Image 1 (cartoon, rainbow, N blue to C red):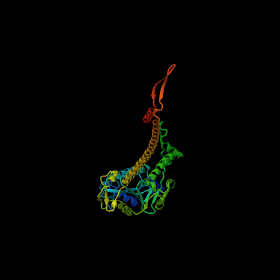
Image 2: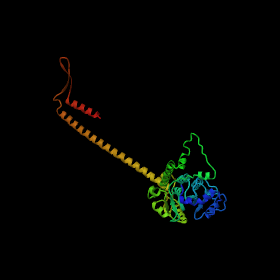
Image 3: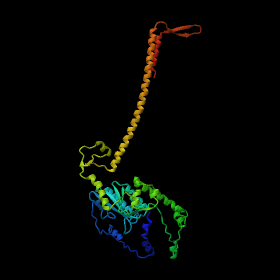
Image 4: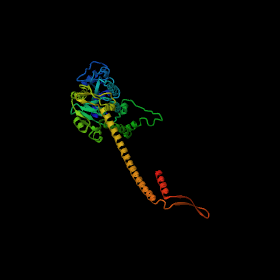
Length: 417
């Protein structure tokens, strides 16, 4: 996962190496970077404008030694590799460890990854990208001319991406693999390679063997899977900042900073000093003239799980996590209110049904009372007899008046549900 234009700069060195010629590193950038490694410790770093530059391996200028309210600066340069290069830049495993050490130091308020790289190993990118996602404080990316392929994959996980100039290059978001076939070279020099596999190892290196024989599809399938994951990382990291889908920016195209700004691959074009001032103002505003509030918002404190909030003369400032906590609590309460409203509507309907039933029963009671009064008015005029029949005669066993019948009906009605 590296930009081809960036790789081309290394071809003379690689060619000389393959020929067995002495390789000389004459570039001032390489010499300067070597002098900054912890292995020779020729130069000490001191805080400048609130920044604290972490040394390449975090041994000479340690994250733990950062002064209060520091902006830690970690360089990510040259070819991205997972492990440290001999006499060269640290790998992403070391950079990941440096980031975690910065997370643990409360003196460090934010972190800047100063990136100048054309990319490199995909798995190295994924390692540092994952560590950035674990951040407990802001992490920014500053592109110092170049952040392509795997280097951009690292930058995409940061809170904000700055570029040092309009001509800085970012993107090249894509994946490819190169297989070098040395058979012809070796045979020309009298060397012939023989590869003998175990009988059961029928699939070992099969994709690469197929590719060497001209069938690229099995290996392309694996590359496609990795590339899909790469695009997903960028989409997740940039989120709503992206102004187009991956059909535009995910083709492997390299963009200058102005073009990248239009499609949302970066956030701002700025000098390093201006970026540091902006970052410094973000947290210094929150900490300036900090005082304890005279009256604490107890309910807000309970939501945030804090004993008390600090404030300044300008007001109270909440961090991103606290805002999300309040937002989540408001959403929870909104759902609870909606549920209670639904329960209230159901109870109201049930009460209306009960009232209707009571009204109907009251009307029936009135009717029965009217019947009783009517029967009372004709009381004694006649009696009702209960007649039992035998084989040959009928016999009256009891006499019941109309009033008694009505009273019995009334008592029966009262016990009905």
